[in-house]
Length: 590
Image (cartoon, rainbow, N blue to C red; front, side, top):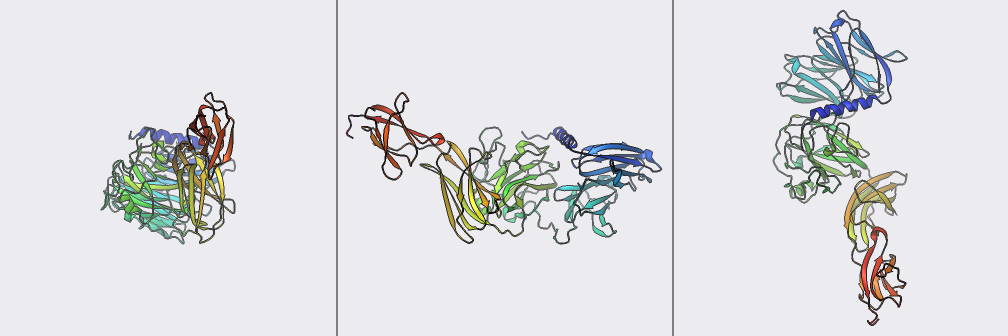
């Protein structure tokens, strides 16, 4: 059932914070004070999960053991004129070396980044000062500075914060609680030399963002970001972690998601024990069809297991439903025509903790919001329709994980895989795959399982193709399990690295054994394709027989001359065993 459980979210976040603090830590002392009005001061040190790890007043020195990370010092002044010469100083112990310091220059509130153990940036980060003025209504103003999906700075207004920032692309997220813009408040980012590298304001509304380019080579423009109220043909390429805006935007010009319960939009029910084709038992797919939609294309640059999360960092603000299809130039038309099945989808179980693909549910998340990871190959693309079910206006961080990589850089593939299929045949399940180019590929590994996550390697097929060469491969699994069988293709390279390819499935029910003639006088032929054969009498005892070749895939069985009546013929062994009843009537002509 969909329900917003705020208290549970808080408990989970607090639990994550406690677990984090129990990890390996370093002792620091925090000294606050030294001004003319220390009695007005109080403060909090907060980790990147929003959990307070130290708090106090002034003058004061506290000792705390903390893991490496990026922390924020919240500084308060009850009179509203800053700390009047007081400061905070963080020292690592037992060396007693200063690792961070700062002050509240003016106002009632400010924040400062506290970089412990390099948690706020790489080795080459540089200091910048982010200043936010108050404007006419400073109590309405708040902000985040984001790198990818990591919040590197956060605060209210007015405030001034020193941040150690790496080169790259940053996004200044601006919020106004009243919804009429910042009313004269502005933000300015200056480098260590005092030069302005970015400035702006929220002119109107309750939410906005501006890009700050601190990269010497990359164009950080977000003009190509996902468009609200978009249609499938306007889907935008996603090349890295990204934060995009959503609002109650409608469905664009087209309603492209097929009806619920159809091929392109399956009706999946939580807890009905009827599993999706990818192995989960969650809600799905888009039960309200296309609602406040945003379309995006995911570009895979490195093979492996693809994971992602919408609304991580505790930022999920509503139900973020989504559906995901394989993407080709004809995908949009196929989705609209209801001829393309989704490869993953989720109709959120809860409105917090994020949603996406994950092997393990993230801390603070709910298993009903996450689907199994997807095995992908470099060069593949997938399209996602993101549905803003709750009609909220907010920013949604999208963060990628797993072993696969996402990028829009040109890809040079060591192999081009053009197909992988599994089809039941009389003697098992026939697998086939084709490549149009191979370079540096040693072999192919075939994994088998009766579920999408438990694998056993059943064969290795040596590669025989080359660059710009069409090559086909085939192998038949002689002993599939009854029911659904899953097969995964993995590519072994010459250097020993393995890339995980696509997964296919096929249903298997053992066919009837072909016995001719039946009944017989004790001599018959059987389709067995080299499999072992047993003959049992009505009491389950083995009956002696001779076995002779009888043509392609067949053997002749000649029973002991004393055999008479109904017998059980067993062909194969293990999960691939098949049986047939044979009647022996000695009165018949051999």
